[in-house]
Amino acid sequence: MKIDFHHPVDNLIDVLAFVKDVGTLDEFHRGNETKNRLRLLLADSENNEVECTLFDNCASDAYMAYLQNTESPVVVLLNLARVGFSEDGTPQVCSSFNATRALFNPSITEVQNLIQSAKDEKSPVMVALSQPTTSQLSQHLNGASLHNQTKVTISQIPEQAIGNSFVINCQIHKLETRHGWKYDGCSKCGSKADLDNPSSICPLCKKIPEKIEPKMRINYLVKDKTGSASVIFWDKLAVQLVKKTASELIHLLKKVTTYDNLCILAS
Ligand SMILES: [Zn+2]
Image (cartoon, rainbow, N blue to C red; front, top):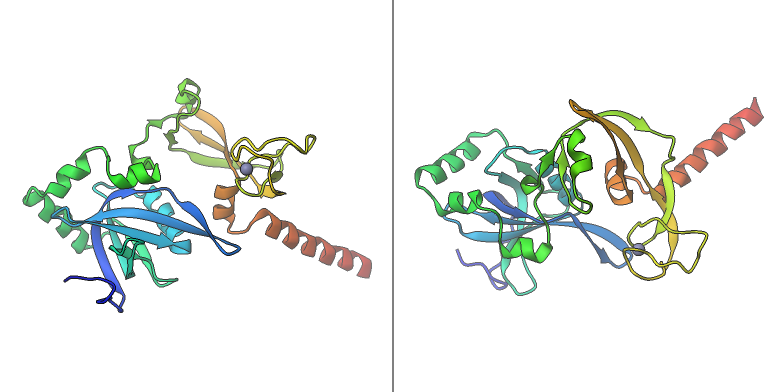
């Protein structure tokens, strides 16, 4: 079937495909809103590729599900997706508002059959999937898939070079509260702001922050068999986890404390 602007597909579709590449969960701005976007490169068993863009909750849910999936090859089932078009008019698979769900390697026979048929026919996609990703998408998005990153134990962390990213597999032991849960940061990137020096440059944006606002941090004490470590989720990840921004939490807390004060006054 040939799909273009003049022959759109109006109904929602289910897509079952191999995941060749996954970008990072990135933010983009539409008006005053900040939205999430996740791009994937999908392929069928003949290695025909199609790009896929998921938005908002579907993007963040899909990214979390992707990170938790340990199976390979990675197969995605997109339930109720929509056919959209990229800027140059190429058809791509997109999420449709809140309808779309992305499931990675769900335990259904269709997934097993897809993997088995690709293996049986020595499909080019299996060769492509077993090689390190060098697709345009990964270069374009600069998004190293976590599946390809070095896995280390906690005791090996001090040996890692500064700036290198790696993955640890650990258990959350406790939430550390002694460092507080909020800090003042650059409104744009969340880097910690130097309040003593108002003309200080944001280390990430390389300019004086337009606005300083409350940002969230979550400290966990985590453990594995080899030791323990402190892990900090800075604002962006913390907000994804809590599903509220620092400003929203401060507002909520104020409400609660005012209510408590009123109760004390009343008693
Ligand atoms: Zn900044």
